[in-house]
Image 1 (cartoon, one colour):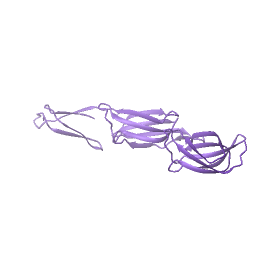
Image 2 (spheres, helix red, strand yellow; image 1 turned 45 degrees about the vertical axis):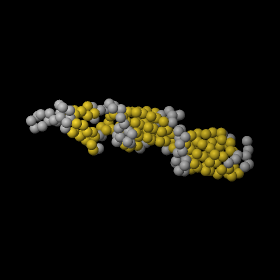
Image 3 (tube, one colour; image 1 turned 30 degrees about the vertical axis):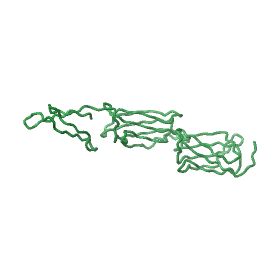
Length: 231
């Protein structure tokens, strides 16, 4: 099929699987002629996830989107003869990790989490992605957006610099969110308070501190001078 219309404006919006705009995606347009691809225009999406391209003429085209040198969208058989807008849904998912106290089931803030990724680029280069890391927020959560699907990930959780969980996983291609809740192991800590004559001190306030994080919990000793904490 032949086209003669010139100066076609093509607006492209890139989103993740959860329909959220993605900034910095390399959106590339290829013209298809006699089954061969010719790259026509390429650029990065803006702060709203959009890029506007002007094509010299109408024709048959293919759209491709790349993220960290990995192809995350392929849209074939696009016949363009008028100005148009397109949405490219990129294979990028969101992650949410939640850390809870195993005994109380309460969320645990300030837990240090890391995640590593291994994947192959469009040039068949094997990449070990730079480690992402952060502390859980006040609700015990860590949220990461726009992560590659069908990639091998390794997740690690630390408390007081001690590793308590390692999880390997891969996100499916159509999965909007990868949610994982992890229980942090705890132990009961009992403190006994007594005076110089070894008599138990009942009703005595006890405060324990978590290393590097300040006060952790308060309690008052019972009639036997004991106070128990979950730590």
